[in-house]
Length: 498
Ligand code: BES
Ligand code: MN
Ligand code: ZN
Image (cartoon, rainbow, N blue to C red; front, side, top):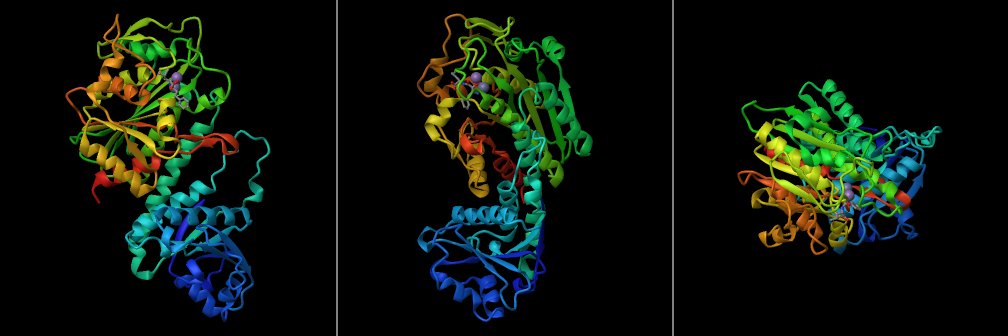
């Protein structure tokens, strides 16, 4: 899908479809008013019948209006004024993109950015409009022998922009395209089945990305290299599987090499059976999504490269498959991590923290990052606590937590903070090792974060995003969401400081 901007009038657009907003009570924002006067009042006349519900994102198609070059006009309701907010605007953008896509048009011109909440500038408007539209029309049919896309010929959406706002809008357009590309990569990788998307496959994708972009460089550690370094926790997870693990570092160099990078560390369990502490078979197919943290790291690095972001960023993928093979670890096994700390594996299904602890130690020693964010589909408990709307956020640093929360609000890809208090640490006591890998039923998301926290050295600023509830959707719309690529990208854009 391609995106563009135009400063032309809505009535003169040479396109299959023009999209305009309608406010509460049939009040017409500038683009709809322009169409109305060009057509001698055809918009107001159509609205008199009350066919456009007063709900944000409700739609009404109009055809062959006099004085309007495009054969179709799509009216999109802003909904009731008292409920008007950013979320309602996002809903309009996505409803319109889906409708235009299903309507069979090749191209549409949308004037919805003009009604975005006033506090938001045109850079934000275009970044959001582009990323959200791309998200709304995404399809994954790579594994289908018969592709359904001939029914979906939409190739391009052009957004209407006032001449005075062109520069800001063009910047937002570029950012929106880059976010869309990163998010799409994360979704594609998430949606691929575990027999295709193995740890080695993830590593190959990182290498391919580095080949494509001059700012990116990839390093891949195989099982033997990890053995030599002593990554006993990551290796213990991988041992039950025929698929060998990989630790991948993908660096974006956008600033002075002296500048300490920001590290993004992603959980990349390409399939989580639970291991010997095996999961119930119901819905186990969804555990192919257990690498979505790693996928979001790859996607975000792609976005960084496309934007030539003036920052150093290192992405780390901790990739392994959690299977109950004959060499799998058993409940009660004790392993020595790269940090030297010993871990008692009381539950082999708490494997995410095992791969992440070695990756965290490795990135701190190898790259001395200024701050670290890890991203993981870590705990079912996070879904119980927060549902599927925000990602869980835990952090040892107030400023970093605040930046991530803010980036979530700005991008609409939100997070909600849970307490990371020392009080919870005692739940991780082991009778036999330095730490246990589970902390019992209470506050499962927090004790998982407490486990990771033990591997953060020198009080380095660190945050953990638990994306168990947000990385994919179940049910009829089953599929990866590409979250939190929008949040991470916004955080890095803010960090780049402009
Ligand atoms: N990948 C799962 C977490 C998960 C489960 C995410 C369901 C999304 C949906 C993780 O590896 C896991 O199994 N966690 C356990 C931890 C427990 C054994 C302490 C869990 O949440 O049950
Ligand atoms: Mn698990
Ligand atoms: Zn898992």
